[in-house]
Image (cartoon, rainbow, N blue to C red; front, side, top):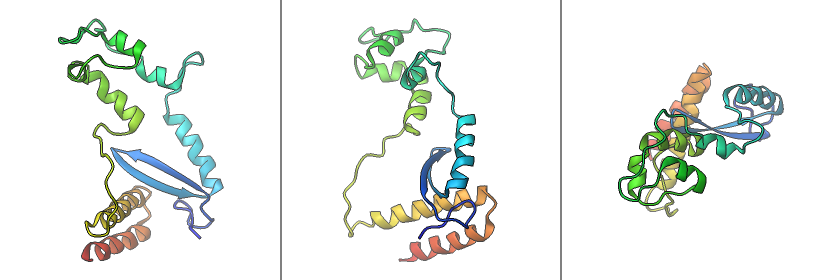
Length: 162
């Protein structure tokens, strides 16, 4: 049984993944805390207009100069918005200033992590566990749950020694 990360009283039945400053934080919460969290998310998330799909709202061009075109293939940002694809590799550099915020909104990060094999020999499982504990530690500190933070700190140190 897993207890709620917020109230530490009820059974956690809702599992959220948040991205805070490019770090993935997993949150396991009870129904009551989930309702409060849902309200918080509603207040933070920009809502698209009712006539457009969420992905379309992310592609809206908010810059002053939409006439910029790729030097190699001639694709404009408006063309990218309509097609949903770039014409060549140089488009990524041409539209970099518009892509970075878009990628952060869609994926939560701008660097691709990729897939990796799960083998016991390379220590990836341990590193993943340490990263997860560090994310939970950051979250506990942010929520001013210092006893939980101390416990997580000790668990991180123990895991790093092995």
